[in-house]
Image (cartoon, rainbow, N blue to C red):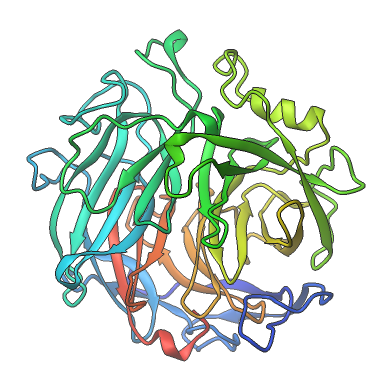
Length: 457
């Protein structure tokens, strides 16, 4: 338990400016710059769009000190690893990506990934119709009261998948869960892995074995985001040499019907390496090349088989693309190890037409105290970004990037002995009043609420 506020140096940086309509970072040409640095203690920091200094705050339902939050904010904690769910199964560990859906009677449904790796054990997602009974990962669904922010029920919604890291919500009310591995029969599993799977958000139990969406590629998946106008699916890859992909479904709302997978290319810069030496605020034109073999037979032996095909055709390389979210007509994505100091980059892709788009580096961290390896992200109701850290070094933060480009702290994991547990799965409730996210270690979900109106999120 912590009894004093966190003292550390913050550096405030700005990316590009807000357009008149409120779209995130909409005016081009304004290069990010450091504004100033100041020591933060008990005094409220002067951060445009921020919510003030973080202070250790007890959970409203348990009294535990799990998070540091700004003044005026509260939270509940639930969905803990090992707790018995409504279907009788134990809550698995490794909570990760997540999305919120409006449910019956005004309730909130959370579909939550579990990045469980390996064979079934006490922490596995089991007891349901599974894709692969020898694999331990999957998803759980939680039903939460939006007023009390307390858990009402929870159950396994997909089983038999592996290393379910992130994913994304669909416009038609489902969750795409992604496997961050290409392990298969050579590793002792009954089936191949490295796929995306669709999870109906409104099913009350897992009754049908999930179907791998093979046309969306077999690689080390991280997250997806769907443009609701075109229904194109954008996908990220969590490797040190990673690609940025898009998938054109043959039939809208029916990803299992197949489609075409493509990989991003920077026009006039074949095989561009975007991991370092990039300029914040500079827009680059993007074209796309087709991936002819999205489900290669050698994927288990070569986890970059799909990526290598794209690079051979001129596709760009990123450093560990992780979080991916649609908002304000754009796709936002994190490169966790991107940047000259390998501390993280935040990118925006804006579709221009069916064949091209515009890619802009919104933010690159130059100091760990500013932003240290962002992973999951989501777009806030006001058009800002919520960034979750995963770096295994000290307290893990939830950061906010305002529509005007200012970076500020939202929350910190202060669980004694587990402070370096990854923060993941940030998602706002359908009524925009509650921010949900996960602490992978010690394994729980939190619901945070308060005066969001006083800041940029």
